[in-house]
Length: 447
Image (cartoon, rainbow, N blue to C red; front, side, top):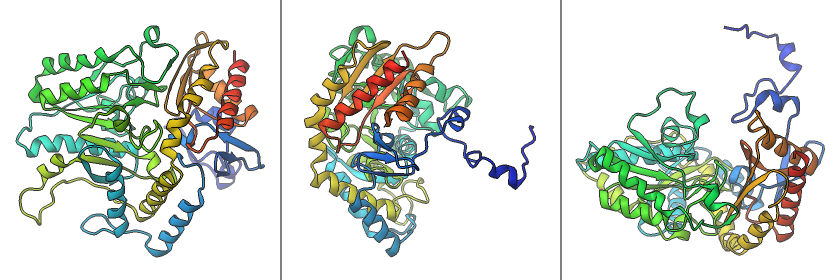
């Protein structure tokens, strides 16, 4: 093992040393750090006061914008009143209030809300609920989980097992057993430069029938997909695809899970993508926008029948052996209630729906720039594929992201050589134009 001890003086020579950044090339970052000191509304600010336009709503989460006064005030009040309350055998009033508010936004009979702290935890919670549901109903042989290629479901072992992004999987051993994957829904030849849901691709849902036939319907517990695959580069579901998955799952008694960690709370112009597409899953994962990113929180909404299946046996006995120390944390609940008030009072979901065509037109204006291979938009989200540099995949995307921050005062997201843009829902039409003007200059700079 390499020598790791250092003197205190040596540690202080670079105060960036101690923090191992997630999903970040640490050495490159620490040579040219991108540090954000504060934020307000649509902007971050660097320590020297430079305003940086947020083109990614934090990390797909600050849907109401940054440092909104009602959310900050709600968190402060809650911290002064009740800092922490255990969620095992005890609870606090705001947890029930927030659960009721979230349930009211969900379609169909999605009603029972289980809180956790992140999208990764939400996914693992949903997978565990699905497995336990079949077990308590006497179908314990249903243990197989089905994800999708290019899917992202967080970083827990359950999430990376059903996820389909190679780099997120290949370093971590065999992962969960009994997992299969649907094909990705993206085909550039058939879908390039699409606004909204592609016309081509609904038939890819039929692959589920083949997978189920291979393993036997009685062995399959659940299918999990993102209605719009965000982290892999904004891949909207093809028209009719989700309906077909729902039909196939119903035919075989399989639970359908929507991972709405990114699509929830207005990103696609509705409270949830399930509403946009008219398809009700059995379990719905949420996080990110529930508090507008102000305090970590996630959760799962279950259909009534799933919850009811657990409510048997002695009333004093625990029905589901699962939970987290910080489930329904008081500060997170306060932030969530304040965020939902802002979404409602400022009509932010409806605003996103109204701005969608303006956003799509602005994104598509990048077509024809050097190295742009494809552009996809849905709701207030866009993915822009750049041609990779020979023998250096991901380098062009990283350079574009860094140029955008250092030279254009803009934050965007990258996945390899794909740029992602998804601003807060408070973005103005003028700011949409400004964002894509800056993206265009960044693309030209790395051509």
